[in-house]
Amino acid sequence: MTEAVATRGDAPGFARPLDILAKAGLVLLLWVAIAYPELGHLRGKGAMARAIGYPVVAFLLPLTWWLFWRGRAPFPWVADLLITSTCFSDVLGNRMDLYDTVRSFDDWMHLINPGLLTAAVLMISLPRSATLGATIERALAFGMTAAVAWELAEYVAFLRISGARLDAYADTLGDLALGGVGALISAVVVWQLSRTGRLVEPPLPRVDRAGHRLAA
Image 1 (tube, rainbow, N blue to C red):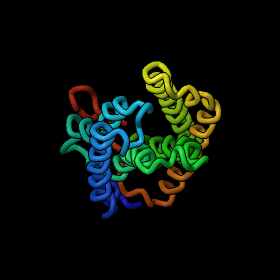
Image 2 (image 1 turned 90 degrees about the vertical axis):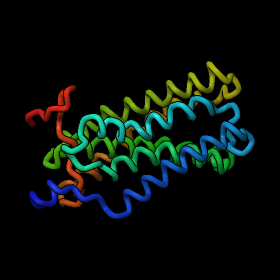
Image 3 (image 1 turned 135 degrees about the vertical axis):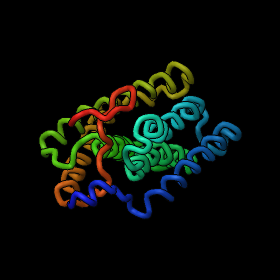
Image 4 (image 1 turned 45 degrees about the vertical axis):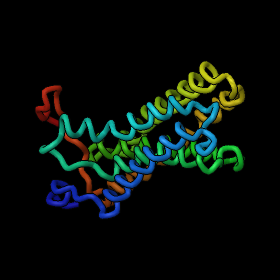
């Protein structure tokens, strides 16, 4: 990858429109789930927690970029799309009632979504010259933390609040294992794409709280 490409950081053409579409779809589906619970299939599944938490997750990177990196680095559209996709796919899966009609759908979500989140974090935080070992180390550190955080959120939303989903926390160890596998897969994929120069978006530069760029 040339220095010019790495500096310019052009996102693939599909990333921006898909990211905007996914965010709009997420907001719409959450509104439907709250306004018409029978349509969203989120009754007893922490609908309000999702309605609050998912927009925070989906808009955290744009807000952080605007505060600290606007004018200093191009916006990471691909990474933001991956983050938004995790929230959108979960709400869409519930809207289509896939969690209750497709036996393995929940397992696939616990494998794929931590992998997408981990890939996004690797893309915005690791230099493209990072070794495979360093990539795996950060992937597992973040991916397993994210998987544990999700299980804790499920516990609060399903057991402590709704009380109606007593089976939702029964497969915790399996879900955590799937999250770890997803993070590991994302590490290998991101490292391979970086090594072959196919990640054109550079990582976000390190900045202090005042927004000043730090030395690498």
